[in-house]
Amino acid sequence: MKTFIKVTEIWIPDRERTKLEFGSGLYGPLTDFKAASEQQHFAYDEGLPGKAWATGHPIVLTKFEHSYFKRTAAAKNAGLTCGIAIPICSGDFLLAVVVFLCGDDEEHAGAIEVWCNNPESENTLQVMDGYYGTLQHFESLSRQYHIPKGQGIPGIAWATGMPVLIEDIGKVPDLTRSSEAQQAGITTGLGIPVSNSNEQSYVMTFLSAKSTPIAKRIQIWIPDKDGKQLICQQSYSKNSNELAKIFETITVNKGAGALGRVWLTGLPVITGNQESDYNPELDNLSSMLAIPVIEQGRLKAIVTFLF
Image 1 (cartoon, one colour):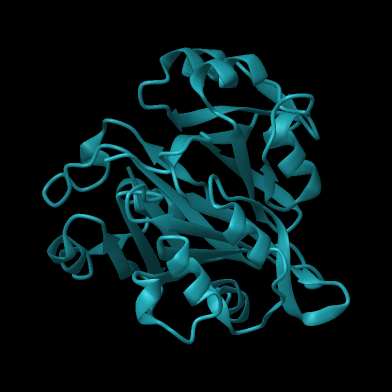
Image 2 (cartoon, helix red, strand yellow):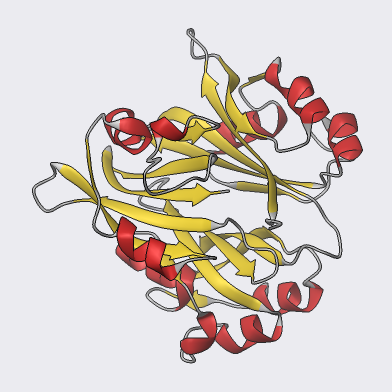
């Protein structure tokens, strides 16, 4: 199965916390691009990861040519044309930057957006930037929207401060942009709030077409009411709803495995071929990205993408 995202990376501060160094990544067959990336370092405000660090909010870069992107030639050779960077922060301090790289071709349909609150209206969100692949008409419509707090996937994520996963957008007709998404072939939507400050709020939205999903599986994990274990609040599987139900019965202790490590450290995690670091009894997928959702220094949720 093809997925919309072709490369996933985590960049972390070095020992002096003055540069970002390679943490881990998923590159699939793009071994040359992997080799060109692993030795890179990014200073504050340098390259895509450094720019996300400096701005303190998610960034979408839709063109690499003549931009601040540092790996343009290698990306071009790999068929990569777009980058998205999400800073993971605790207060003023950067913990890591998660980077997604996509390819712009006719076979991949979907969208990744950054929404921010409108300075002229405190209670609405608008698209700050986004990557829409081949969905030009949907992009044009989306950029005209002002979504109120609590409405649509971005508005709900903003209002609750929690990730929002809609498995079948067509079954929620009163959802903002539902009909437009259906016409564009979008079936699944994920919204992730990215805390920045009390004045400015950002929400990442991942919109997935059935033929090229954002990921093969998406899960939202939250601490239980006692704050002692992670529980799977929601699990979407492209292939097996039964598997999704199984995950909803699992709990994870702090520090245990990949998910427990995210909870313990606040750092995003990528697992490659280390199935034992995830849960081999229930899942044979070998690649996972886990992103923490942090608000005021506390973990509110973990979103996992399984590839």
